Length: 393
Image (cartoon, rainbow, N blue to C red; front, top):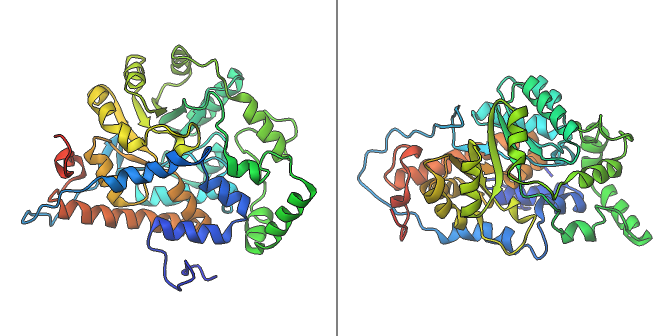
């Protein structure tokens, strides 16, 4: 399939949904399902998008919107758009050295890229390929010594923001991954089906599996004895999620991180208040894209109450279900400072690499422009609940 074709229609990709379809066609099934899937029945992942669909923008006319401003400031950093590329584990198996490609696209668009602890490309590889500072995401691991070493590496790379993921005390069950044998345990027939699936995607095999090596967690090579075994890496990572983590651990993180700290995975008002009391610089209202506990609130539904409770004490971002610039406008109207994009850039990089991510960000900017202009607002920082129908000011 030509790079400019999608959905079998011979048309250029125009939306995140188009990129999703292109990614589905190009990736082996188990990798697409890993990117696309969520926990249990995937209800919360669907609700993340439905929550945005339920929100209605308030169209206003006869206002001067000839000059639109998309710039904002998040955690001391100037952003050309109110967007951040969220940490995406294993991105480098979706496209060749995908984290580097995405970081370059983010740099070109003037938005931050956030490197995942379980990225394929290492902190140092991303740093060598980019000039703009990028953010770093960390889990609070059982091996605190290695977590401390990762923070030191991120500091050495000039990362200004540490995104601490706090909703992974245990791992949610992702049924698509289980069925596809992502954790092992496939029957002989299942292994043969998986091998055929891989063979049926020769472009991915050549571009990623062969030219994209090494396919290992680049930030964890010093922790795992068998540096060439993806299953060994996965077993080590799974063993590091720490159910003992409490708010007191944030003090330990602060002792080892001099920059800004953003807590990702806050969904409850009381937890948001505790985050503010514990000295976090910001929080990300997130349910991990529906990949942890199914049946919880959609991120956009949880956002307004959290903003009302702590929006004057720390910066509030949103993650989950954002697929368009219209969604971004709605999230900002509800009080978010910016939005994190996860699956959206994953689909784009899988489909068309750096060019896909750059195009996806450009499309979102264009969509935001229409939303601002037809809501009669000229600056993203001026968006508030008055831009939504049936929303309290």
